[in-house]
Image (cartoon, rainbow, N blue to C red; front, side, top):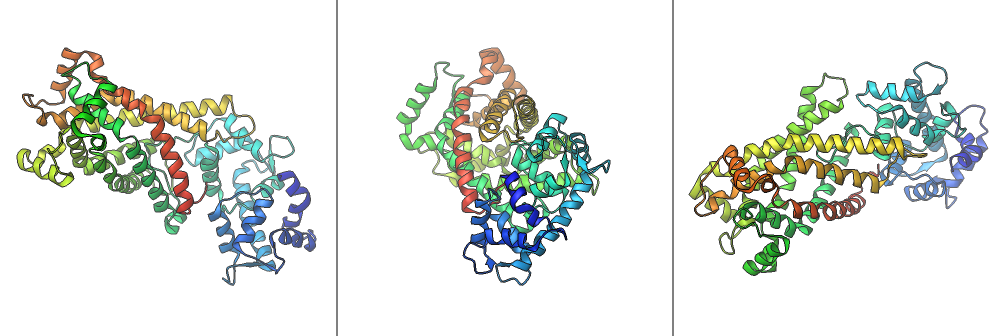
Length: 477
């Protein structure tokens, strides 16, 4: 497509004085589907689709908004030409900023160097994959014509947006992880893209958690009651829960689990931005290590604020039918009989578990994605959805393996006040008792249903998230 676009149309849009004006008209006519002399958003979408250019709805709207000088919601021929000329000037500046030795071409080493100055680290092999996606003459370098043609209809405006385009659309290994909040540009914040993306993720999380809630409750039951009866298995656990409270009891505690998504996401996002500012010098880009530290601190901050809801969720999940009549009744009874401190039982092991989980999840995700890019990527730096989801599942599983003993102790501390005849113990005391009575395997009770829910949770979350992005008109990266 790119070669055809260059050979037939793009010389028309080269925005150079020598280019015949009729060539501009040829490109404009391709987009002006009804021949009325103007291009609206529908024609722009259809026309670019016909040329094999897929930007996503917000990308096409950005072209229209930027080029629409008279604000009539359409592009006439003069506005169209002016947009191309202005956009080419911006792309020229971006090209020069990457062409470090000023030899007129961009090489892999220059891409690596440019990304390093922005706090992003990639291998030269990964940089070569970027070159291959733009290079049309097989020289493994990018000249100005190739660069201009590639970004002609991409509404990025500077080198930072181009790097962000590579980051989101190609899956370049820059240290992103599901445990680290995403970053948004100032433009995305002003346009509202950030809250739409967070809302889409929140809704996806709610559907995913609700779908896998029976497995989550089974995990909690095995963590708390498994020590009394080593015979509790998956089948027996489900049978016991249904016998005690019916089918509906399988979702007990899920309401709290869903309700805490919004405040947790909001606090995590806000505090992540604040920690980034504290850890970086003004004007500099945040590096991978600083991003990890900021994300971990943001996670700790969010957990501190929403932790009482974690305790309520555990109490509801472990409680018997009729013991609590809902979230507020549970909170009222905990406060009345145990005091405010009960809402933070298990807080320390929960906090300690954030670092190994986030660190291992991040490291394994980076390692797997980098390995795929270096060994299996052919002519693209885009691993694709299946590969990225696979990396996420494996990295999350490794993170859970490392932090699960702390999660188990946290849950027992949250619930031990409900267990008759059980001595109230601190974190160290619980670790000692579990190891002495149950051995090391005792620290991993309930991990099987926990792992069982990972695959369906990720799949459901991804499908819902993609559909919500379309519904909320989140920019397709």
